[in-house]
Image (cartoon, rainbow, N blue to C red; front, side, top):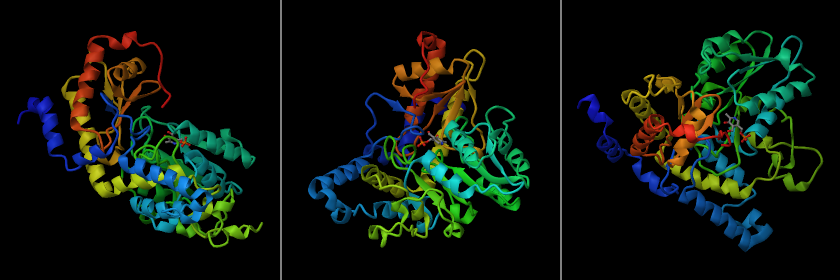
Length: 429
Ligand SMILES: Cc1ncc(COP(=O)(O)O)c(C=O)c1O
């Protein structure tokens, strides 16, 4: 088959026919007339998550407060039961993961717990391309420790504005570093960092290391226990499809189970003592100790349901399809000549599979207007300033044909100047 045959719509359909995960799409509510490529911002609702949420609502109707002990599954230990399944997905012992809080709140909890500046060892290493909320959290944690973020926060610069070289991060790991906090996947370019290498290097320099895995859990396999990372946080509303603002999760390595969480609450107390209502805090003795408040039952139920789909497909198959789809997308963009100067697109995501997360960053001088023009055509993407259009195929529900159509739209929008009619940005995702 020649190169041109692989560019046809018929070839896109043939890829869908051969796709072993194709059947999972029927379990999702894909908005009508839409090519949905924004699952790295908000994943779609599955019938499984819908049923689980409806089940929780029915239990609330039927039981009222007795749902805490009578509902199926019982609400009182809902976080623990869902966490055990989530742990399997991230390569962790069930006691090392807890479904709780949200990404930034959990980050505060983790940094508060693990950042212990002492003597010369006061610095936190992060990157210049981090998601802003992580930087806000780190600066405020440094402030709590009466530090100075101008001195104590080291942001490893990018050489090209897209990627962060692991070697540069490792160079920043000196004996003045107390904590390293990194994204698993950079939210803008989609670069996947070499987590095992960075964990080993941080430990060699005597620092703690944690990861914000918001852009990798559900798309990329993890092996937290085997890698020996100290902690991790992530959300469940992107590739885990648990719904807008859904409950997040965190990982704590079991060697830290003796530590006391920076922010304690009654939900982190040992389950068998929680209702003794003592003022002395007796922690759960595992990741469950990091819970602060009452489990949010409806969104945890949604995660419970949504996880079933991910488990059934299997993370290895999800990753294999995700890479095949991002390969296909990058290939189509290049083969259609969209990177030539008359179109002006560039691909900002690494070509190497080992360095690629779940989405493709397409750069363009008029990225904001093009993103709006894509939405006007029913292709849902998001724009990240200054020049990135993020296209996220989600293995569970995106078809190869969707990607083929999205690339046609990218070409047509520039050819016809459609982006010139768009006026405002759209960064609200
Ligand atoms: C990498 C990353 N970290 C943190 C956050 C903030 O998450 P939350 O609003 O759940 O705290 C986001 C949100 O999209 C993100 O992409």
